[in-house]
Length: 205
Length: 165
Image 1 (tube, chains in turn green, blue):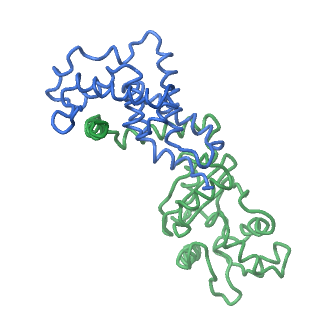
Image 2 (image 1 turned 135 degrees about the horizontal axis):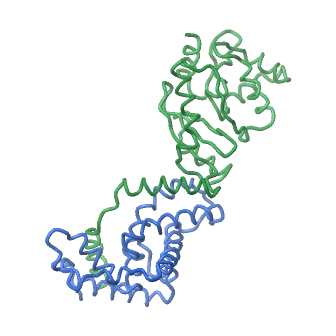
Image 3 (image 1 turned 180 degrees about the vertical axis):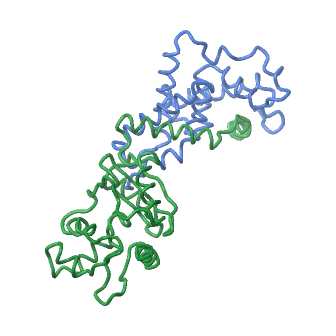
């Protein structure tokens, strides 16, 4: 009795007009706009296809807060932002238009430094001190982990510089790829060795 | 305790269901507004939502309140009940879907809500009752009455497979 009603109704309701992707994406985009207008969009994100793979870009009101390689797992990165900052996170490419354009220009060889507001709040203490010194290594140049440690005021903290680079929340923008080993080998990279090579070759060209 | 998902995942998982519910309860004209207001209110409250909450039931509760607000604000405007044709079967030739939407819109509000929240959102009657008020049995009766009325006004209903009793 009830059971046959349940299944009959479920069959029946399939005849209701379908919800299309177009319906939903228009509603979603309008939601992102009104959320931003109401100050409810704590983190906006988008993805960007580049020669080093698809990058995730995320921004708060304060600026770009996260650039993530695909191998970091974009879903995990967003979950982590939800945990550390706020779960009010939406796909909202508008806030990232300028960042995306500058990154495109960089990979096209038309840009040597980024002019973007950055939100470094994911990085604290010595790691943050290291990151703040990395932009001093100019485009096309490299520095050793030891040299960066000295510049950050702790010459013996070479391993900590490695950790700071490995946990850089803003790779590409904050140029941890320009930090290499004393013997000239590239050393590790959070985006993988191939990505580091692509960036250094791009800048050497 | 599970960590809270980014709100984007909530929209991706529940956006279609909430829109279906809004269309069923309000008709197509006001459904988009109800959806937008529901998700904006949900986004506002999301950080305080307990990690183990039933997100779908929570969204349906918000959508229910927004639908009531919209209906009230509509004031003199015709509500979907007024749009039901006297004889929906007359329209069937090329629009089975529209017929069903019209038949649904022609149900009394409580039946429409019970049908939408139970059959479209998949809430158990206890949760439906929590949203619309009254007991779980009353919610079940409203949905059953809704089905019976739909069968009367919408000729495509379960002529073969379903048996009324």
